[in-house]
Image (cartoon, rainbow, N blue to C red; front, side, top):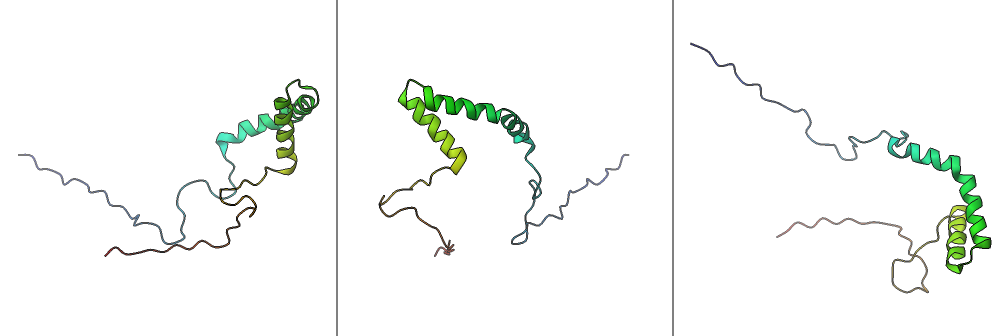
Length: 107
């Protein structure tokens, strides 16, 4: 006669995260390995690419190409321009100063 061994029941001490507690993901300050190589290659060829953009901005036959090259140069030199989300274009960009979250219990 054989005796059955009791099966082991998996128990988990993970009962959820405490409010504000972060679990998983990269630790703060750890670089993203997936994009590190791409960024490294871009930095190696960055000066040459900027020279080519400048050359296109000055000598391209198409005005669209010149404008695109100038836009890219400005974006890198001054940062991308703020875009409006909609509404009155004369009102300017919207500044979000506070986010309020309301939880409503269904009746």
